[in-house]
Figure 1 (cartoon, rainbow, N blue to C red):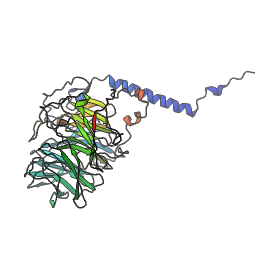
Figure 2: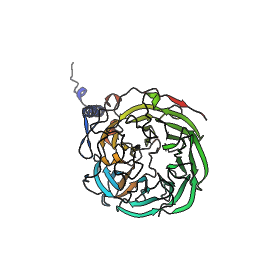
Figure 3: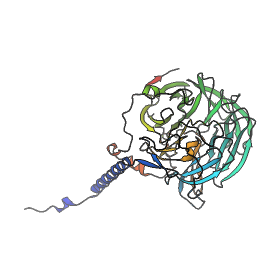
Figure 4: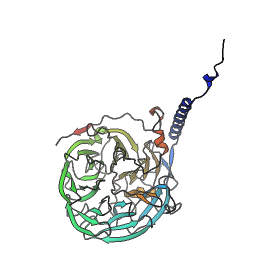
Length: 479
């Protein structure tokens, strides 16, 4: 006898789960399709900017001036605000601009600073709420540094030196600053300064000719010193122990003078740009030798003899250490490399992102060294990639330019600062974007929509840059 099996049409918990997954996939695909249809983005001053994949609507001749930009609130969180907030601080000469990373990079603060002599470096310490800005001469004398409290918005002190300054780093305990004497200095020293008041400790390290860029390891054990070396001969990356400022040793040699460089958290790998090279080199820190040389001209990207001495003056390692981004000045592009296989295999190029504006210009309202060479910075949570001397903010999930920050078109000094409970909770000790390990994203940011959609099958991630991966042409060296 026939009996209707009504239970066959009942919806159980498993089906609900399946429907939820399908709904997420549908929303993800719809979001991707919508993103593809957006032809333009908004400049921070309200003008239309290209999306980075077509001919830019803002060109190299657009001034990108910082005057006339009005902040929306002119404030950062108060002590009564318990939420987590992320801000991008931009430091053109003589000024500071603050953008809300969680709300479309809206400008929330603008201040004048006594750094009109030319900003060279910026680092900070979240525990003391301090940002340190080096400015003035990068030669034999005339260097200066100030300490700024990001909670009270006050300059705490300014210190002058009888030596030059450049791009420095801070120990993670907030006690000492390693200050290079400047790329134009006749000396080869990095000076050790007391972070409390900027005074020299009397210690210094010989790190090579033309002291320029600096990285302190996240555990505070080592300082890495990049010498500019105007002789344009093979150059070593120098490392020393911070415990005694000794045990100096060399990594390399690299092709020519050391320019922007980054290291991973475990201090096993260094990614280094050098004078004259369109691309970068990869070094084994523990063994002190070069592993790979990535030459972008061999991948079809032409160099030019009329540009800056370092055509790739900008490199950044993603917080989770899976990606390296590098500037290509001649072609107004940032290239993204998958480095998950390093050191066993070479970096693999996976995306080329065209800037919305040209880097072929000079910074305006600039004290000196005004050629727009470029710089790259990953946000601490990995959501964004910032391009100095262009102003572009790149969404790392889609490899698309989201917006353009006008003051960042005229400087390559920028820094993320996060606030929680009204005080600073994160300020990087290095100006360069070093790696934070396999779990590099950490707990500095709430779960975001892009992170959720990362779980959706790749077939629906239409907004990602979909280019055939090039076979990377590298020089594999064992020194």
